Length: 364
Image (cartoon, rainbow, N blue to C red; front, top):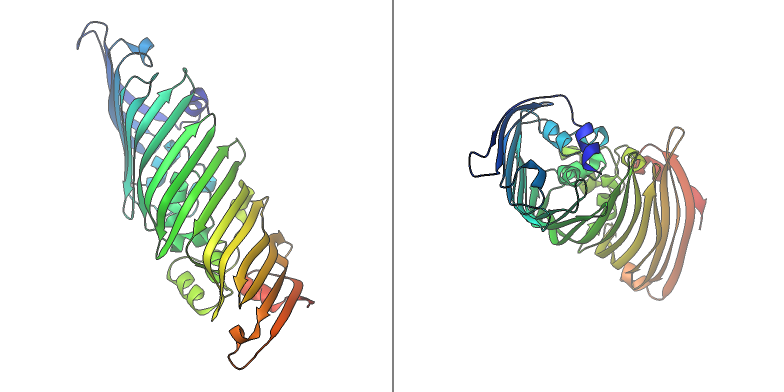
Protein backbone atom coordinates (compact mmCIF):
# COMPACT_ATOMS: atom_id res chain seq x y z
CA UNK A 1 0.00 0.00 0.00
CA UNK A 2 1.16 3.55 -0.62
CA UNK A 3 2.20 5.74 2.30
CA UNK A 4 -0.71 8.15 1.91
CA UNK A 5 -3.26 5.32 2.20
CA UNK A 6 -1.56 4.03 5.35
CA UNK A 7 -1.61 7.47 6.95
CA UNK A 8 -5.28 7.97 6.04
CA UNK A 9 -6.15 4.67 7.74
CA UNK A 10 -4.56 5.61 11.06
CA UNK A 11 -6.95 5.92 14.04
CA UNK A 12 -7.46 9.16 15.96
CA UNK A 13 -4.23 10.60 17.34
CA UNK A 14 -3.06 13.13 19.93
CA UNK A 15 0.67 13.63 19.50
CA UNK A 16 2.87 16.50 20.68
CA UNK A 17 6.21 17.21 19.07
CA UNK A 18 9.21 19.47 19.26
CA UNK A 19 10.97 20.49 16.02
CA UNK A 20 14.50 21.94 15.98
CA UNK A 21 15.94 23.37 12.76
CA UNK A 22 19.71 23.79 12.42
CA UNK A 23 20.47 23.31 16.09
CA UNK A 24 22.36 20.02 15.90
CA UNK A 25 24.19 21.05 12.73
CA UNK A 26 23.56 23.48 9.84
CA UNK A 27 20.62 22.36 7.68
CA UNK A 28 19.54 19.62 10.06
CA UNK A 29 15.92 19.08 11.09
CA UNK A 30 15.18 17.08 14.22
CA UNK A 31 11.86 16.16 15.76
CA UNK A 32 10.84 14.41 19.00
CA UNK A 33 7.28 13.26 19.64
CA UNK A 34 5.11 11.78 22.40
CA UNK A 35 1.41 11.03 22.41
CA UNK A 36 -1.44 8.60 21.72
CA UNK A 37 -2.44 6.95 18.45
CA UNK A 38 -5.61 4.97 18.92
CA UNK A 39 -5.07 3.02 22.14
CA UNK A 40 -1.26 3.03 22.02
CA UNK A 41 1.33 5.36 23.54
CA UNK A 42 3.92 6.41 20.96
CA UNK A 43 7.30 8.07 21.65
CA UNK A 44 10.30 8.65 19.44
CA UNK A 45 12.49 10.95 17.42
CA UNK A 46 13.67 11.64 13.90
CA UNK A 47 17.05 13.17 13.04
CA UNK A 48 17.43 14.39 9.43
CA UNK A 49 20.90 15.68 8.58
CA UNK A 50 19.79 17.74 5.55
CA UNK A 51 16.25 18.63 6.60
CA UNK A 52 12.84 17.05 6.10
CA UNK A 53 12.78 17.41 2.32
CA UNK A 54 15.88 15.23 1.99
CA UNK A 55 14.55 12.47 4.25
CA UNK A 56 15.31 9.81 1.61
CA UNK A 57 18.54 11.05 0.09
CA UNK A 58 20.51 12.27 3.13
CA UNK A 59 21.48 10.46 6.34
CA UNK A 60 18.58 10.04 8.75
CA UNK A 61 17.96 8.26 12.06
CA UNK A 62 14.48 7.44 13.30
CA UNK A 63 13.23 5.59 16.38
CA UNK A 64 9.71 4.91 17.60
CA UNK A 65 8.30 2.90 20.51
CA UNK A 66 4.68 1.82 20.92
CA UNK A 67 3.21 0.61 24.21
CA UNK A 68 -0.35 -0.42 24.99
CA UNK A 69 -2.38 -2.35 27.53
CA UNK A 70 -3.83 -4.24 24.54
CA UNK A 71 -1.46 -5.83 22.04
CA UNK A 72 -4.23 -5.57 19.45
CA UNK A 73 -3.94 -1.77 19.44
CA UNK A 74 -0.30 -2.09 18.38
CA UNK A 75 -1.12 -4.66 15.70
CA UNK A 76 -3.77 -2.30 14.32
CA UNK A 77 -1.10 0.33 13.74
CA UNK A 78 0.93 -2.31 11.90
CA UNK A 79 -1.99 -2.73 9.49
CA UNK A 80 -3.92 -5.64 11.05
CA UNK A 81 -7.63 -5.43 10.27
CA UNK A 82 -10.58 -6.75 12.33
CA UNK A 83 -10.53 -10.13 10.56
CA UNK A 84 -6.96 -10.65 11.82
CA UNK A 85 -7.51 -9.54 15.41
CA UNK A 86 -10.74 -11.34 16.27
CA UNK A 87 -10.33 -13.76 19.17
CA UNK A 88 -6.74 -12.88 20.07
CA UNK A 89 -5.80 -12.65 23.74
CA UNK A 90 -5.74 -9.08 25.07
CA UNK A 91 -2.69 -8.20 27.21
CA UNK A 92 0.01 -5.51 27.38
CA UNK A 93 2.43 -5.31 24.46
CA UNK A 94 5.30 -3.25 23.12
CA UNK A 95 6.83 -2.64 19.70
CA UNK A 96 9.82 -0.64 18.52
CA UNK A 97 11.36 0.41 15.22
CA UNK A 98 14.79 1.91 14.57
CA UNK A 99 16.06 3.08 11.16
CA UNK A 100 19.46 4.55 10.35
CA UNK A 101 21.13 5.47 7.06
CA UNK A 102 20.19 6.64 3.57
CA UNK A 103 16.70 5.39 2.77
CA UNK A 104 17.20 5.91 -0.96
CA UNK A 105 20.09 3.42 -0.90
CA UNK A 106 18.86 1.16 1.90
CA UNK A 107 18.91 2.07 5.58
CA UNK A 108 19.55 -0.40 8.39
CA UNK A 109 16.46 -1.27 10.42
CA UNK A 110 15.54 -3.12 13.59
CA UNK A 111 11.93 -4.03 14.41
CA UNK A 112 10.76 -5.78 17.59
CA UNK A 113 7.40 -6.85 19.02
CA UNK A 114 6.93 -8.38 22.47
CA UNK A 115 4.12 -9.43 24.79
CA UNK A 116 3.51 -12.30 27.19
CA UNK A 117 4.00 -15.45 25.12
CA UNK A 118 5.09 -13.58 21.98
CA UNK A 119 8.33 -12.12 20.71
CA UNK A 120 9.57 -11.27 17.23
CA UNK A 121 12.70 -9.52 15.97
CA UNK A 122 13.70 -8.50 12.45
CA UNK A 123 17.01 -6.97 11.40
CA UNK A 124 17.32 -5.78 7.84
CA UNK A 125 17.32 -3.04 5.24
CA UNK A 126 14.53 -0.59 4.37
CA UNK A 127 14.64 1.28 1.06
CA UNK A 128 12.39 4.15 0.01
CA UNK A 129 12.21 3.80 -3.77
CA UNK A 130 10.30 7.08 -4.01
CA UNK A 131 8.12 9.16 -1.69
CA UNK A 132 5.51 6.40 -1.34
CA UNK A 133 6.98 3.00 -2.28
CA UNK A 134 9.17 0.96 0.06
CA UNK A 135 11.22 -2.24 -0.28
CA UNK A 136 12.24 -4.29 2.75
CA UNK A 137 14.57 -7.25 3.38
CA UNK A 138 15.14 -8.66 6.85
CA UNK A 139 16.00 -11.74 8.84
CA UNK A 140 15.15 -12.57 12.42
CA UNK A 141 13.21 -14.94 14.61
CA UNK A 142 9.78 -15.41 16.14
CA UNK A 143 8.64 -17.23 19.29
CA UNK A 144 4.87 -17.49 19.74
CA UNK A 145 3.01 -19.64 22.25
CA UNK A 146 -0.05 -19.06 20.04
CA UNK A 147 0.89 -19.76 16.41
CA UNK A 148 -2.04 -17.69 15.24
CA UNK A 149 -0.42 -14.54 16.67
CA UNK A 150 2.75 -15.19 14.68
CA UNK A 151 0.63 -15.43 11.53
CA UNK A 152 -1.18 -12.19 12.45
CA UNK A 153 2.20 -10.42 12.58
CA UNK A 154 2.69 -11.65 9.01
CA UNK A 155 -0.76 -10.42 7.98
CA UNK A 156 -2.17 -13.94 7.53
CA UNK A 157 -5.69 -14.77 8.70
CA UNK A 158 -5.74 -18.16 10.43
CA UNK A 159 -8.56 -20.33 11.85
CA UNK A 160 -8.98 -20.40 15.62
CA UNK A 161 -7.78 -24.02 15.75
CA UNK A 162 -4.21 -22.89 15.07
CA UNK A 163 -4.26 -21.22 18.51
CA UNK A 164 -3.38 -24.48 20.25
CA UNK A 165 -0.02 -24.73 18.43
CA UNK A 166 3.25 -22.94 19.13
CA UNK A 167 5.52 -21.53 16.43
CA UNK A 168 9.18 -20.59 16.88
CA UNK A 169 12.32 -20.29 14.81
CA UNK A 170 14.22 -18.26 12.21
CA UNK A 171 12.38 -16.25 9.54
CA UNK A 172 13.22 -14.08 6.56
CA UNK A 173 10.96 -11.34 5.15
CA UNK A 174 11.14 -9.57 1.81
CA UNK A 175 8.71 -6.92 0.50
CA UNK A 176 8.83 -5.42 -2.98
CA UNK A 177 6.31 -4.26 -5.59
CA UNK A 178 3.35 -5.16 -3.39
CA UNK A 179 4.46 -8.75 -2.71
CA UNK A 180 5.67 -9.88 0.72
CA UNK A 181 7.58 -13.16 0.96
CA UNK A 182 8.05 -15.02 4.24
CA UNK A 183 10.46 -17.93 4.35
CA UNK A 184 12.15 -20.21 6.87
CA UNK A 185 14.48 -23.17 6.88
CA UNK A 186 13.33 -24.46 10.24
CA UNK A 187 10.27 -23.16 12.06
CA UNK A 188 9.18 -25.48 14.85
CA UNK A 189 5.65 -26.20 16.00
CA UNK A 190 5.92 -28.55 18.98
CA UNK A 191 8.02 -31.46 17.59
CA UNK A 192 7.24 -30.63 13.95
CA UNK A 193 9.69 -28.78 11.68
CA UNK A 194 8.27 -26.57 8.92
CA UNK A 195 10.26 -25.26 5.96
CA UNK A 196 9.37 -23.27 2.86
CA UNK A 197 7.97 -19.94 1.76
CA UNK A 198 4.73 -17.96 1.60
CA UNK A 199 4.09 -15.12 -0.84
CA UNK A 200 1.38 -12.70 0.24
CA UNK A 201 -0.32 -10.03 -1.87
CA UNK A 202 -2.84 -7.76 -0.19
CA UNK A 203 -5.82 -5.96 -1.69
CA UNK A 204 -8.50 -3.84 -0.07
CA UNK A 205 -10.95 -6.73 0.41
CA UNK A 206 -8.76 -9.83 0.66
CA UNK A 207 -5.27 -11.29 0.60
CA UNK A 208 -3.88 -13.72 -1.95
CA UNK A 209 -1.41 -16.37 -0.80
CA UNK A 210 0.92 -18.66 -2.73
CA UNK A 211 2.74 -21.11 -0.44
CA UNK A 212 5.25 -23.91 -0.87
CA UNK A 213 5.75 -25.71 2.45
CA UNK A 214 7.12 -28.99 3.74
CA UNK A 215 7.09 -30.63 7.14
CA UNK A 216 8.60 -33.75 8.63
CA UNK A 217 5.37 -34.98 10.22
CA UNK A 218 1.65 -34.29 10.53
CA UNK A 219 -1.61 -36.07 11.24
CA UNK A 220 -5.05 -35.94 9.68
CA UNK A 221 -6.44 -35.03 13.11
CA UNK A 222 -3.97 -32.17 13.52
CA UNK A 223 -4.63 -30.75 10.06
CA UNK A 224 -8.39 -30.86 10.57
CA UNK A 225 -8.06 -29.22 14.00
CA UNK A 226 -6.40 -26.23 12.30
CA UNK A 227 -9.66 -25.49 10.47
CA UNK A 228 -11.81 -25.88 13.56
CA UNK A 229 -12.97 -23.62 16.37
CA UNK A 230 -11.24 -25.74 19.01
CA UNK A 231 -8.76 -23.93 21.25
CA UNK A 232 -6.47 -24.69 24.16
CA UNK A 233 -6.48 -27.93 26.12
CA UNK A 234 -9.81 -29.07 24.69
CA UNK A 235 -8.40 -29.07 21.18
CA UNK A 236 -5.24 -30.93 22.21
CA UNK A 237 -7.30 -33.62 23.93
CA UNK A 238 -9.61 -33.85 20.92
CA UNK A 239 -6.68 -34.39 18.56
CA UNK A 240 -5.08 -37.01 20.80
CA UNK A 241 -8.24 -39.09 21.22
CA UNK A 242 -9.97 -38.81 17.85
CA UNK A 243 -8.79 -38.86 14.26
CA UNK A 244 -11.90 -36.83 13.40
CA UNK A 245 -12.10 -33.73 15.65
CA UNK A 246 -15.48 -33.01 17.24
CA UNK A 247 -15.11 -29.21 17.31
CA UNK A 248 -17.09 -27.18 14.77
CA UNK A 249 -15.31 -26.28 11.56
CA UNK A 250 -14.22 -22.67 11.05
CA UNK A 251 -13.78 -21.61 7.41
CA UNK A 252 -14.48 -17.92 7.98
CA UNK A 253 -10.79 -16.92 7.59
CA UNK A 254 -10.87 -18.30 4.05
CA UNK A 255 -13.44 -15.67 3.14
CA UNK A 256 -10.64 -13.09 3.47
CA UNK A 257 -7.69 -15.11 2.17
CA UNK A 258 -7.51 -16.86 -1.19
CA UNK A 259 -4.71 -18.83 -2.69
CA UNK A 260 -2.97 -22.14 -3.10
CA UNK A 261 -0.41 -24.24 -1.25
CA UNK A 262 1.89 -27.05 -2.26
CA UNK A 263 2.41 -29.18 0.85
CA UNK A 264 4.90 -32.00 1.34
CA UNK A 265 4.66 -34.20 4.45
CA UNK A 266 7.38 -36.77 5.11
CA UNK A 267 5.22 -38.74 7.58
CA UNK A 268 1.41 -38.37 7.60
CA UNK A 269 -0.54 -40.25 10.27
CA UNK A 270 -3.84 -41.30 8.69
CA UNK A 271 -5.25 -43.36 11.58
CA UNK A 272 -4.03 -45.35 14.55
CA UNK A 273 -1.29 -47.57 13.15
CA UNK A 274 -1.68 -46.41 9.53
CA UNK A 275 0.96 -43.99 8.31
CA UNK A 276 1.62 -42.54 4.86
CA UNK A 277 5.10 -41.59 3.70
CA UNK A 278 6.20 -38.79 1.38
CA UNK A 279 2.77 -37.24 0.96
CA UNK A 280 2.43 -34.43 -1.58
CA UNK A 281 -0.77 -32.40 -1.98
CA UNK A 282 -2.01 -29.30 -3.71
CA UNK A 283 -4.39 -27.23 -1.58
CA UNK A 284 -6.59 -24.39 -2.82
CA UNK A 285 -8.65 -22.12 -0.55
CA UNK A 286 -10.89 -19.09 -0.76
CA UNK A 287 -14.52 -17.98 -0.61
CA UNK A 288 -15.09 -20.15 2.47
CA UNK A 289 -13.84 -23.33 0.83
CA UNK A 290 -10.76 -25.56 1.24
CA UNK A 291 -9.94 -28.20 -1.37
CA UNK A 292 -7.19 -30.83 -1.31
CA UNK A 293 -6.48 -31.93 -4.85
CA UNK A 294 -4.71 -35.12 -5.83
CA UNK A 295 -2.85 -36.02 -2.65
CA UNK A 296 -0.33 -38.76 -3.38
CA UNK A 297 1.63 -40.84 -0.87
CA UNK A 298 3.00 -44.25 -0.04
CA UNK A 299 0.98 -46.24 2.52
CA UNK A 300 0.46 -49.90 3.52
CA UNK A 301 3.05 -51.04 1.01
CA UNK A 302 1.29 -49.34 -1.91
CA UNK A 303 0.08 -46.11 -3.42
CA UNK A 304 -2.46 -43.83 -1.77
CA UNK A 305 -4.35 -41.09 -3.65
CA UNK A 306 -6.98 -38.76 -2.27
CA UNK A 307 -8.96 -35.65 -3.14
CA UNK A 308 -11.36 -33.80 -0.82
CA UNK A 309 -13.14 -30.48 -0.37
CA UNK A 310 -14.72 -28.81 2.67
CA UNK A 311 -17.12 -25.90 2.21
CA UNK A 312 -19.87 -24.03 4.03
CA UNK A 313 -23.38 -25.26 3.36
CA UNK A 314 -26.85 -24.69 4.83
CA UNK A 315 -26.95 -26.29 8.26
CA UNK A 316 -23.23 -26.91 8.49
CA UNK A 317 -20.38 -27.91 6.22
CA UNK A 318 -20.03 -30.47 3.45
CA UNK A 319 -17.09 -32.82 2.98
CA UNK A 320 -16.84 -34.55 -0.36
CA UNK A 321 -14.05 -36.54 -1.89
CA UNK A 322 -12.54 -39.85 -2.84
CA UNK A 323 -9.70 -42.05 -1.64
CA UNK A 324 -7.94 -45.00 -3.29
CA UNK A 325 -5.34 -47.38 -1.86
CA UNK A 326 -3.40 -50.18 -3.53
CA UNK A 327 -2.37 -52.03 -0.39
CA UNK A 328 -0.14 -54.92 0.62
CA UNK A 329 -2.44 -56.82 2.99
CA UNK A 330 0.51 -57.98 5.09
CA UNK A 331 1.20 -54.33 5.94
CA UNK A 332 -2.31 -54.07 7.37
CA UNK A 333 -2.48 -57.49 9.04
CA UNK A 334 0.47 -59.75 9.79
CA UNK A 335 -1.69 -62.83 9.15
CA UNK A 336 -2.83 -61.70 5.70
CA UNK A 337 -1.11 -61.91 2.33
CA UNK A 338 -1.63 -60.63 -1.18
CA UNK A 339 -2.73 -57.24 -2.42
CA UNK A 340 -6.03 -55.37 -2.41
CA UNK A 341 -7.31 -52.29 -4.17
CA UNK A 342 -9.58 -50.13 -2.05
CA UNK A 343 -11.63 -47.19 -3.34
CA UNK A 344 -14.29 -45.02 -1.76
CA UNK A 345 -16.15 -41.94 -2.97
CA UNK A 346 -18.64 -40.07 -0.80
CA UNK A 347 -19.90 -36.95 0.93
CA UNK A 348 -21.46 -35.82 4.19
CA UNK A 349 -22.86 -32.72 5.84
CA UNK A 350 -22.64 -31.62 9.50
CA UNK A 351 -20.92 -29.06 11.76
CA UNK A 352 -17.75 -30.96 12.71
CA UNK A 353 -15.46 -33.49 10.99
CA UNK A 354 -16.58 -36.22 13.42
CA UNK A 355 -20.26 -35.60 12.68
CA UNK A 356 -19.61 -35.35 8.94
CA UNK A 357 -17.96 -38.78 8.96
CA UNK A 358 -20.94 -40.20 10.85
CA UNK A 359 -23.21 -38.82 8.13
CA UNK A 360 -20.96 -39.89 5.24
CA UNK A 361 -22.63 -41.70 2.37
CA UNK A 362 -21.16 -42.97 -0.87
CA UNK A 363 -19.89 -46.00 -2.69
CA UNK A 364 -16.75 -48.09 -2.86
